[in-house]
Length: 331
Image (cartoon, rainbow, N blue to C red; front, side, top):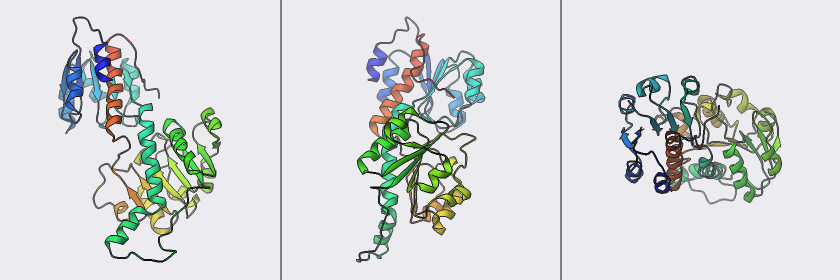
């Protein structure tokens, strides 16, 4: 797919200068781009190395979650035409700087829907059925053989709430259809026609939290959603409810989550994202038996990496060839 994309490019006699901000990708991807472009690769280990590597670049493939701001654009120089991230979420990007300078900004939104939805469903099952806690019981020799030991929460017939009904939220609901859930509620900035077609009901956040057995966080991190889940919102949830976060750690007040999981305000949580990342090894989240934590693995599959890199490259190369972004970021 990437080979075909590059083969079809026509820059004439030009060889545009590209910068790639992380070297931890298959070398064949970089070799493919080198057929038509001059490519500089930073190892991505620290910001100063990245800033040096991007100097003079016309296009940047921004493969890290490091802050993408005016300092970066200044370091690249006035010849910079386009930058594309390899993420869907853009909370670390100063998008207004790109608008101000007339620099194209792309990202990779739709391609993340399937792998992130898969992680969300895995976390739902692991948290609801107490996988982590059960493993701890085995390791400590506390495996009991009685009918009511380690009972979890049922998914069939449940009410599921999805906070943020964009591509990821919609794909989560598609996955849930096979679990015979009772109903789906969702909330967000506005009502979505896709939700009407899927049979999901638009409600406010308070109603969603009070009525849902499972709550999925799938919205962007913004000024409005930062710490949306806090002591007050956890108090609205059922003691039997399960929280799943596959969006951004900053949407959850983590000390409040630890408190809710410890005192039984909610039953369990499954987290693919947290604050900070990497999480400190002494963080209290890691000591909780009813919290399943994985290290931001939402898009970590071989095919997802190829798809995301291809779209990132396509965004940049398309603009440099005189075209437009394949996946433009719109705030």
